[in-house]
Amino acid sequence: MRGKFITLEGIDGAGKSTHLAWLVERLRSRGLGVVQTREPGGTPLGEKLRALLLADPMHQDTETLLMFAARREHLARVIVPALEAGDWVVSDRFTDATFAYQGGGRGLDWNRIAALEHWVQGPVQPDLTLLFDLPEEVAAMRLQGTGAAPDRFEQEKTDFFARVRQAYLRRATESPARFRIIDSRKGVGEIQKALEVIFTTV
Ligand code: TYD
Image (cartoon, rainbow, N blue to C red; front, top):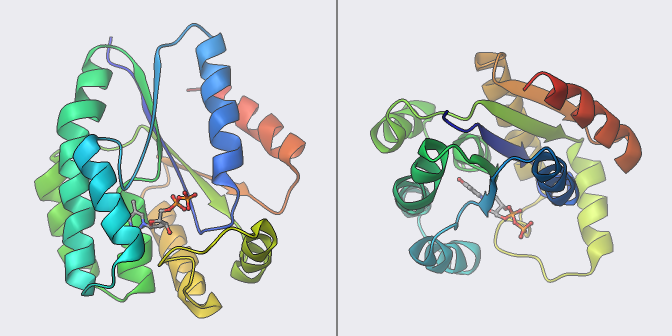
């Protein structure tokens, strides 16, 4: 049987990384084979592209094309083979992030991204996408609190993240069956309970 493809999304600072490790553990405790991965990245080539994407200034079209180049590799070498082998794949970000960051944040045309999505993915879509949703001001405060050096995206201003957030919510409205929106203002324990409920039906 084909495995399930789960993606986690949200603006920087929304806390998805905290829940990712816990979720993978929960699924493994059910006896499932789970591949934990991330975008941009997930393959040796993809991780090299990630390093460029997070650090080097570039044109927004270049940024979008590199995101999809990394994704093509990720799908071909990791995601599709794992799903076909019956494993579940849990990815820290996927194509919704390109609609949100390059579409919403940078203002790239939505239809161009949709064309690349179609080319690179064909019919492959996540079975379930968890959107960790948080007001951009709260996320900015949380990011400041970590003390880590901000990457090229994290250096963006709050209004960039406001647009990213709205684009994520637009994606959720366009594919309501695939998305579950998690209110990230809630505490870790409460969110874990919400995730338990969601995964009883997946
Ligand atoms: P992120 O997932 O937040 O990793 P970390 O928790 O290690 O910082 O970093 C990836 C960044 O890449 C994030 O700011 C969003 C951005 N991104 C895009 O702009 N477009 C995309 O298509 C993807 C997958 C990520």
